[in-house]
Length: 219
Image 1: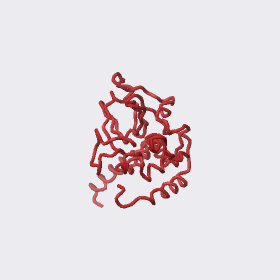
Image 2 (image 1 turned 90 degrees about the vertical axis):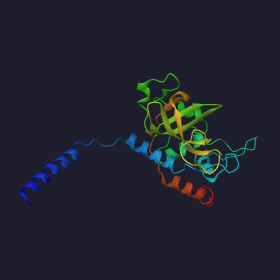
Image 3 (image 1 turned 30 degrees about the vertical axis):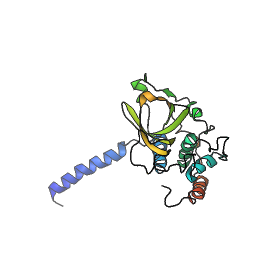
Image 4 (image 1 turned 180 degrees about the horizontal axis):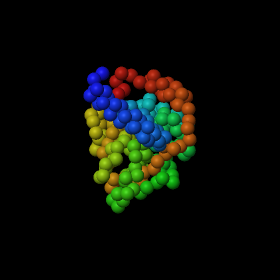
């Protein structure tokens, strides 16, 4: 090796070693949050077949939370936005301690911050990918934060329409949709990433059972 090359190699080697030694480990919260986003992303594009909350993956969400998906008096299966958020957490290796079927239950957490038209910049800065974000339209609704920006969040939500969506969807039916949500329309955000650890193997086995019902045209 030429002296000059050895010198350059030595400098870069020193920088690399220093970077490795000083690099901060990624926290559990960040790892789990990133995983939640990945799990939610894989379901983007699944849509209801008949506008009646019906799809094998949505049945899986409800089954995972030990909800039987029994039809109500309206003939609809239970709303699944909260069940989807729960499933994405469980698939990421954590088990939030709550009844996930009611969207408002996700707001009961010490990390809760208020959003809406008067949201504080300092509070918005606390939100990270994998947080649960809540809305109140006709009723309560929840989704997962994918990315945070000064004026809005990019979210992944289940049991929602394609309005304000990102990407192309085969139909206009509700489903798992990637969206842009201004902070002014949100109500709160909470961090469930540090929930107790849980085994993902039975979760994946249950998902495969329901996924087997899918056809090539389901997505």
